[in-house]
Image (cartoon, rainbow, N blue to C red; front, top):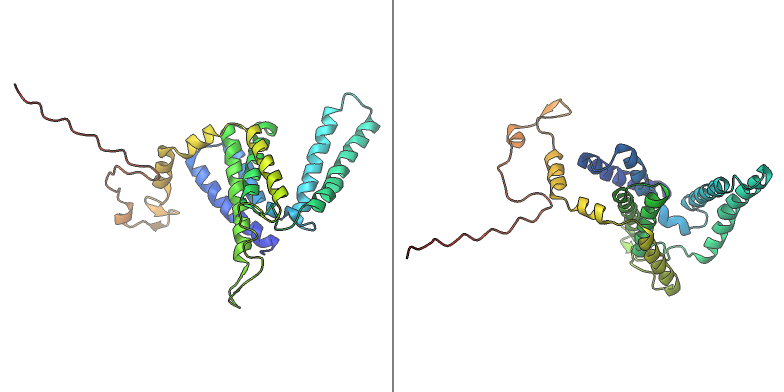
Length: 272
């Protein structure tokens, strides 16, 4: 499989390319775009959470421990003494960072359910839940972050499959087919659990209607097509040839859109 450096480098490149398109489309504020892009980068390393000694696993459980320990601290601030708050905060941090981490890895199997498309869908929906209900972002932004997460996750699974092919020895490794799969047929209970978690995350997530309508907007795709290449010069230095810079003739077809069906002409009226 690809190593951590390769995964995060590929994830950063893909997330950066998607962020550039999103910025050009002018659909969300730049401050939101930073967090959305980071969701894509996180997705590119998240499948290795089931690898016990991996950096993504340790980082994720550390982050969860910090998040929930401070959530407990702030929610209980007015009811307990300082000493009790210290115990609650530290206890929650240790319980999640080490207790939940250990319990998770006693159940998880590397290249199991977390290396599957259904897990990518779950992480995408869970990201929308976090952005929508925890970070209080607009529903469209929440699902855009979920989309970035999904793409980053797929980049990881695809790289693992590519690295399962030994080009030099012209052979396919035994790990081929264990990463990019829809479900884990070897562990049906894990698959059922992930499907249940996916359904729950989708139910809790904000409505995706704003995201879907924005993604299917003809005006947005036409605008991206218009801005894809420079009109006059590259970086103000290299002039664009006139035959490229010239405005193309008008067309009924726009990028990403289906042309409207031609209307039928009315039959000529006959005089009685």
